[in-house]
Amino acid sequence: MRKYLYIFKSEIMTNIQYIGNVLFGFIGFFVMMFIFLNLWQAIYDDPNELIAGYNMNQTIWYVAITEVLWSIISGRKYTKKIVEDVKTGNITYNLNKPYSYIGYSIFNHLAGCFIRFLVYFILGLLLVFIFLGSFPSLDIVQILLVLLTIFLATLINTLLLTFIGLFSFIVEDSNPFYWVYSKLILVLGVMFPIEFFPPIVQTFINYSPIYVVSYGPARLFVNFNYSDFISIIIAQLIYLIISFLLCLLIYKKGVKKLNVNGG
Amino acid sequence: MLMEVKNQIKISLLSIKYAIMREMLNKISFITNIVFMIINNSTFIIQWVVLFSIKNDIGGYSLNEVLLLWGLASSSFGVSRFFFKKAFDLSTTINNGKLDSYLVQPKNVLLSVITTDVEPSALGDMLYGYIVLLIYGITFKLFLLFTLFSICSGLIITAITIIFNSLSFWFGKSDLLAEKMDGFMTSFATYPGGIFKGVTKWILLTIIPVGIANYMPVDVMRNFNLSYLLIILGFTIFIVTTAFIVFYKGLKRYSSSNLMIAKI
Image 1 (cartoon, each protein chain N blue to C red):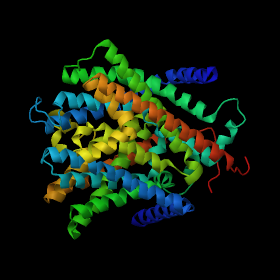
Image 2 (cartoon, rainbow over the protein chains, first blue to last red):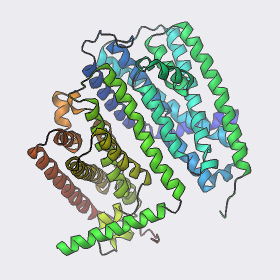
Image 3 (spheres, chains in turn green, brown):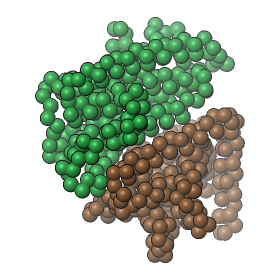
Image 4 (tube, one colour):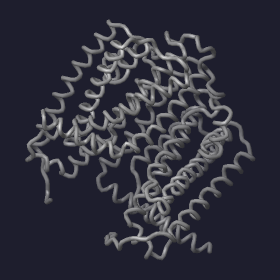
């Protein structure tokens, strides 16, 4: 484990060198929040009107948290890198190293997530507070518990992205699977709370990764209660184990049939 | 002069043709990229169906009109990425000294650079636009207008990215700025213009010209308006010309360390 922590630490140091890029990236978040603010102001005739149990401020806070989460965890470059490693055969360079490729990739990605978390979470919340002038009522323990679910959401998403990337062992280019996965999370779990969907879609979302990666933490942030927290944590732990096993399985199977020509 | 332009277009089309042939070497990957991009874009219909189930009119748009807006945004994005993929990498090309091999060719440098590669998935974006047009209710007139506006909007997106990427001639790395500008164009292009008021509306007609590239074309397709059509065509010519001027002004400052690369 120490070697992975070392990888994590050195990647953080690298990311700090490029903190300007992360801050610059925050402009994109600002624009998206600005668009959502205008959109929801156009939809809500009265800020106190309830749509699917959410008033305007709650909906915007929900979208803000899911956007923050999405900005932290989205891993287009990460998935692309794994796909390229498999496609080009670069993954072989890691076979004789004293670490697992999966472990190396995950801790590498988590370091970037951590830096983005610091920037997006703090600045993001501040920005939305300035936009709305109010903050959801949460005590310090509840904030810590929400942060725990955000951490688990990041971990699960990283594992699922790793699985999608390693799927290139089977389909050669698994980038298109990432597009569909990311868009499903974005459309069903980021734009608005799942209560806005018809009941049948809600059932599907409740069993999908969207629940553990996006909806769960955001729902807790907007309207915290302990029974929701327990069900979200249990679902997250189940997803964590399943996604980890899937990564191990596809990696072991893929490496066995790896065939690299030249080098 | 006209002959020269004709020859240049012929060369660019040939370059695109060979890039497509290269990509089609792996047919499964090529087709998967296109199909998945169409599925990827389709997911956003869900978002708007849900929003319009809450309210029938958002920013003066109906569901059908938002779909048309989405279709145009997707199609124009496809035009820019499919035909001019390398425009979005121009800053890296400049900074890595990779312009050298284009400078010795007896053709237009900018067009030669930006048409050397294609993005197969962007074909999915273009097709998606026409699928949406079918859903909206296609007519011959609408088909022609949609195609014209997809090209104009695609050219505007490409021109803006060329202008910002060309800043690398003066300031070194400008790729992040160009990437952000491109992101703004895409983000605003898929939301009804009517939800933005006051200063934002003016910004969207000037600094981030989504208003001209997307909102006005949709207005013309909803209710034909000749003055809007002329503004769109005029702006396209203006911004494309500006892109050429900025690139060639910058090119005079270009220097490299004689990077040796083989272009096959």
